[in-house]
Length: 169
Image (cartoon, rainbow, N blue to C red; front, side, top):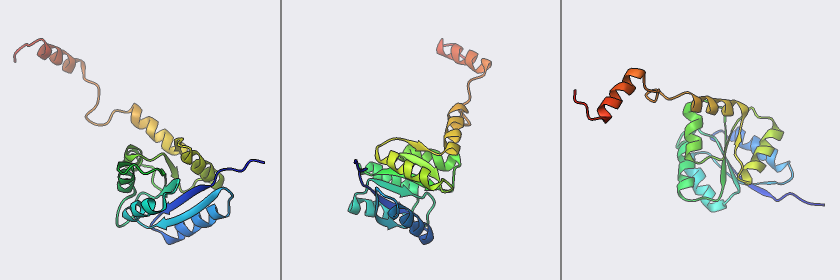
């Protein structure tokens, strides 16, 4: 009989009831151990350094320091832990910065329990995990140029060609 490797967690959320619920959920499931909790981004960075978890479950919007700033700092420090964002926010202004900062995955808090367990296991193995809603938003963001990055019009290309040839005003 093979046993799954034990995955250690740090739970980061500013709401005590959310931390308690996640702790209870993971402690009742085989293969997980919650090493600690944090209520803000800066506390998450400190606790991650102290506890060295496999996975940090990170909320994004918290008073006292954002999750994105904490992810960026954990990445800068070369932390071993994989960061799995667990939040209620799936807007581009939340999703893209978290992933750019180094998050391994991004799930919404409405994810079913089994999906969350699977996501944490995948994150611990270094695999990217995205909720379907977030994946759709990311694909759309990649396909739709940001304002100011639209393709050049025919006239703009013509002027650029003339400038490249050294044509004066």
